[in-house]
Length: 140
Ligand SMILES: CC(C)(COP(=O)(O)OP(=O)(O)OC[C@H]1O[C@@H](n2cnc3c(N)ncnc32)[C@H](O)[C@@H]1OP(=O)(O)O)[C@@H](O)C(=O)NCCC(=O)NCCS
Image (cartoon, rainbow, N blue to C red; front, side, top):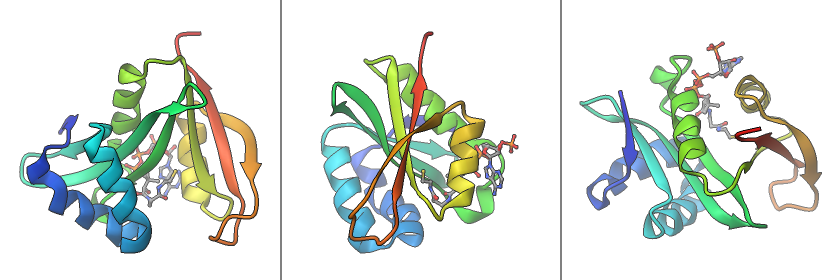
């Protein structure tokens, strides 16, 4: 499996992976804005795109993982781990953030397993749940 920058020809496949998980209303704008800034990486197993990570580098002068998702049948094989590692290697800042809805136990476990620590939360979002923030210091 290769982790690489998304190409414009990947857009439909990326939308497919992300909308299955997050729905078109949430995933569409996130994917489009990140592909324009070249802040979208994909996991390519040769035959298909099996995962995607979007990140931004202008979040309070830190890097924020905006979205990570992996096709259901490719989960628990280290795809998300590889995608987040690639963001770490590209991050201009040593401060990396990510977030997860408070109800998303799998995402919270994944972020802990990848070395992130709790770092506050955001209330009053339209999703109706708290968004939990997580932080990881790179190159300590
Ligand atoms: C969360 C998600 C991205 C994880 O992707 P993944 O490729 O399966 O994750 P990895 O295989 O790289 O797992 C890395 C570690 O996270 C933890 N983890 C991942 N999935 C887990 C699960 N279902 N239950 C418990 N721990 C889990 C494990 O510690 C795992 O390491 P291990 O397999 O060596 O034990 C995937 O489940 C997904 O797309 N979910 C829907 C979208 C989502 O919730 N995104 C996260 C928003 S932050």
